Image 1 (cartoon, one colour):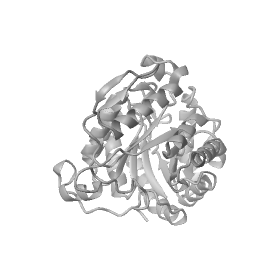
Image 2 (cartoon, rainbow, N blue to C red; image 1 turned 120 degrees about the horizontal axis):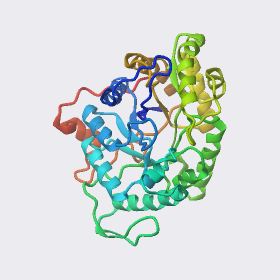
Image 3 (spheres, rainbow, N blue to C red; image 1 turned 180 degrees about the vertical axis):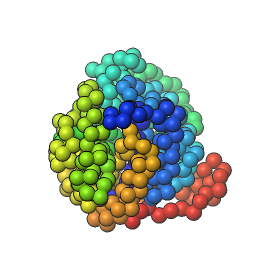
Length: 385
């Protein structure tokens, strides 16, 4: 299995202490956590995109550019890029720039987002979210795979005539994942295009996400794609590691329950109102390392996923967050990797080593030769485990 650190950059006070860091510190923490995740052997780091609610992730491309400069090996992703709200030409340009800055480390995840207030805020109708997503995907795909693009336009996109999006991606079009949380649409779209799926698996019962993954795999096969490449990612709920279950519940329970009580908007509510319920039946990764290994195993039993995404408890003191990240890397990742191997991001995966347009140089070789942004690189670290 592969592992990703996701930060949707929530910006909340700690519900127990009432403390909150300034925005610039919170953003610096996102970068520092990504750098530490790379040091600890995580495979990927992703940032979210939100335009409503208590989040600082309205400019994910700016953050990903900073992450490209701060890291050398780890793959960079989005979680998710809210494509229905964006101009696909700008998405092609902005994310190809990140791909160039990172020497081909970008993998994009698109979705409709789960903040309904974003749509009227940016001038769109929530009722059009699925049509906007499908239409803009088609434009983005053409802009990354073709030059001199002509597009007739439709009710959701404008016409294009002879457009070549610049810069071009570093080494061929980055892979596009589809984020899926609540309906079959994104799972079906991913399957029809032969793209991988990322299940949110964050706040609802596991089987709700399992239904989406089942639909994806069924449709993927129906469309004639090779099932070997039907890769699936899965998110998770809160992460908190302690030496005993009781310590984890006692220390993190009040924080979890305070956040749940304050988060009561469509798309972000959960049936797990107390920490014991969330630990026993929900997607939260709260407990001892052994319990977390078992919980990820239960995710895999239902979803068969290839990459596990985790998020830090960002209202806690940052040093405590980094301690949790380190314990996860050292005490959880090696055993889960051993139990659940995957071909994702290996030579067996077409995107494991994307071939460059010129000279046949892979992103890894190019980065090793010159360093990202011209900086000498440290010796590459192997993934944990």
